[in-house]
Structures are given as structure tokens and as C-alpha cells.
Image 1 (cartoon, rainbow over the protein chains, first blue to last red):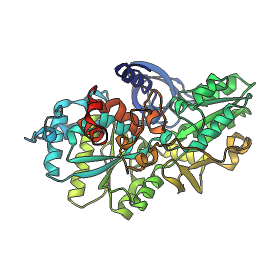
Image 2: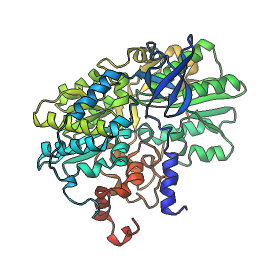
Image 3: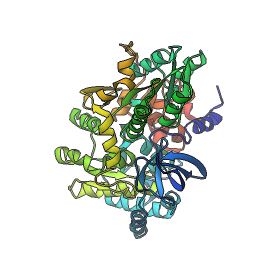
Image 4: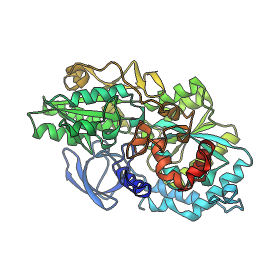
Length: 104
Length: 383
């Protein structure tokens, strides 16, 4: 058995990037095969070839949601900006965090 | 716009938490986050503690690896043990304990088991190695099903004779309705899964609102997404106006992804009923391969052998998946069952609730409180 602390780190690596239901935003760098809709995308710094079969409207430079080698949706930049705008207008309150010291 | 860092701004998160606390007042709201990805994000970013005690999160069944009954995994293992077969599947599935062993263990004994990132990789294995029958062990919710659908159609187009799919795709909404029907879990509202809804669309959640009067806010996966969703949901509950709201607007449309839905329609039928771990048989909750594609369906082409699956003794995965009990209520949690040597499926998967609590819970006051109620404090000193 690994010591507990290392164990945690090891499992984090195991639970790393290839999570099943997790989809990650990636940017289309190049559409390599127009007919079978293959494209190279940059997913957090790693390039990978994926299929654009589910998003025929996607073009180079678009951000898409990547899941098991497929783009699921083209991300809507305007909607993302609107969400951020709503968030940035939220006013600070004087609520106490956690109601107590969480490190106790 | 990078779609990640913008949604992790700590200052905005603090303000949002303040707003949520103010909105909640002294009441505790019980919200179910359906998706396992959300469960992990809530723990990973420490949001569980920050929202406690205003928000009590109930973890839902949205972890495809966890809800797959042992029997189905045993069947996949039986396929893998056939020397003519190469079994391909996602990494998450490899270490889930079956009745006797895991896929990793049978691979160590010489069975041909390969981990793939995409079903198209499994298809490529079949094309490049015609001497083996490649069986793709397909699992996942509606998020993953379109990828399998495209792969099946591609196999048909290429006329591949050595590629089969063992289809275990499931539908999320019937499971949620099942949980609401059994009525054992008290829930004030739902944080809806962003990626499943990207495919099925926001309007698919209408029955939960119309028939059960529970609000649904479909959320993204970054901390600000989750906090904003909690805020929106609490406001809905307070105003007693349940509806389907979309927080994850950059990806979720009302009608979902019609192309993906169309491809699924072409390839899958809805099963009469399908078994879920912990929940039992749920009507109309699974996908099966359509008759036109029967030649690529492992269940029809290779006889089904397994009839009885054995759940690990002492494991409470089922209750955890229903949201009835917490991972720390399990006698095995963190003792015999850890992510290195998982006993139950919820500890294996990168979306399982037990794995989330184990990996990130050591920072969490809420988890420590839960553990303290169960075990004598002196055993916790190393934490």
C-alpha cells in the first residue's frame, strides 16, 4: 500500500483527464478532412484529432465542447460573455463565510 | 474567451456565496446535483463547505460507471475471456470490480482488453486487426451515446464484420423521475447536468417541473457556473415558481443538438426496461441497438451467458446513488474501499461520489463532521 498522502496524489492522476462524461472546451485549429468531418483541436494545450460529425456548422477558430473524440456543441461566445456580465454585476454582501472557521 | 479561467474568479465566487447565504437565510435547502462531474467539482473547489449549512447537496445517479449493474460488467468480462475477442472500453470501466474480478485483472491473465479514448479508436482497432473480433463495451448517458451511434453507422458503412458493440447506454431523465416517484429522497430542486442537456436539450426536463413541481437549473462545470446555478435554484424555490432554467447557456440550447438526437434515433431503440445499480429496473431507461444494425450488436451476435451478478458485501453504493446515504456512512469507505483498491463502483469512477469525497474530502469540514459521527475522533488525527 502507498502511504496515504502519496495515495491521494496517485489517485488524482488516475482520475485525471480522460473522464468519461466530462466534456472539455477546445479550439478548432484546422479541419483536416472536410468529407468525414475530422478536425485538429487544441484542448488545454494538447492537440488531438476529433470528429465534427455532430456539429456541421463548426468552422476553424470556433470553440467546441470535446467529449470521447467528438465535438458535442459549438460554444456560444456571446452567451458566455452575457453570463459573465451578469456575474460581474453581483454585489458583495456581508455574509460570514461558512458561518464559522472551516479549519477548526 | 478561454471558457475555463473566466469562470474561476475567486472574488466573484465570494460575492455569489454571500448572495446565496443571504437568500437562504436560516433555512437549509436540499439540492440534488444529478451529474457526477458536478459532484466532483463541488468537492474539488471546496464549495460544499462554503455553502454549508445553507445548502445540503444530495448526490445523484449521474455516474454511468456507478449505475451499471455488476451483471452487465460480468458479461463484458465473459466476452473478454474469449480468446477470439478484443474488448475495448473507456478507462473508467477498467477497474470496476465485477462479481469475481475486474477487466484489468482479466487483462493481466492474458485476455485482450484495450482502453480507448473514443469509440472511433475501437473501430480503428477492428479495421487494423481483422483476425480478432473487437467488442466495444459502450457505456454512458446521452452525452456519450451519439459517439457510439456515429461509430455504429460508420461500421455499417464500411461493412466491418469483426466489430460489435455491447450497448449499455442509459437515459438520465427516467432515472430522475424514478427517484422522485419512490419519494424516499427529500429534494427541493435539481442542478441539471450540462453535458447531457447539451444533447437532449433543456426542454426535455419539462416533465420534472410539470409533473413533480421541482425546479431544474442546468449548470456548467466551473465554480462560478455551479454557484450561479445554486443561486438561481434557491431563488426559484423561494418564489415557488419551479421552471427549467439554463445557466450553461454557452452550450445548452432548448432543443439540444438535433443532429446528435437524429443519429441516436437512427441507431437506437428504447429498451422496455433496464437495470440500474442501486435503483433496480427502470422502465424506458436504456438504449438498445436497432434491428437494422443487429449484425453489430454484441448482445444478439454473441450469446449472453451471465444471469446473476454479485454485489460486494457491505457496499452501500446503491443508497449513495439514490441520495439516501452519504459516502461516509459506508463501513468500507476509506478503509477497505479506496480509489487504489475500490470495492464499489462509486469509488472507482472519476465521477463517483465516494471517489469525490475521498479525493477532495480531506479538506472538507463537512466530510470530517460526517466521519466524526461515525468513527472515534482519535482515528482521524492523521487527517
